Length: 284
Image 1: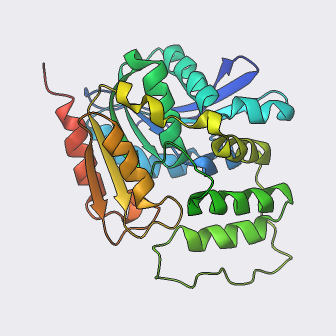
Image 2: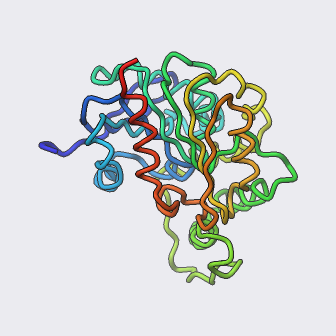
């Protein structure tokens, strides 16, 4: 890339949303939506990490990495980080980008997957196809996923970030590959996110039934690829498979050995996704 890309801030009601645009080939543009952890910090200042991860996709198409809404007032975080409200902010952000013309393909994981589902049902004209990894369309009370998120929320609300990150590092790995409990972390090491209110707000909203989108999945009419890790400790395979079963014609793939970090641990992930995206580049 000739110039180092920089995140831009796009105004939305009550705040702004960041976008990082990576120019690329002539294919259908790709929108990337990360998991809930992307709300812990700004895109600005972390551009290099995103470029390293997504530059490969630019050989075929432009890539837009979109962050989570940034409220002007932290007290508005719970409202603005609700997955449906976040999808509305993403829609506004997409429409504001002069160099990207929707509809776009979407590659989303975990919490970003639920946002992308709301984006697709509320703004069907913006989405051409979907790639969803470790996604859940709902967070039912009896699910182990709900217990995990409640633990994260408790750590975050108490500011116990060292314990949170230690526990998260274990839970992101495939089940059975590490001890079930995180090792003790020195109390002197307390990494503090720059925007914890966004992370907390999204977790709360994700646990709220108003964020559940299962009943509307049948409205989705775009090609969809759903991927799951068989050893995912955060989102149960059954929850991800439920999404695939409710989206008409969706393709479901599972790597029995992969954990929650499907993008990095799913065998053959990039090749599988790029082939699926390329199908949308073909002339009708």
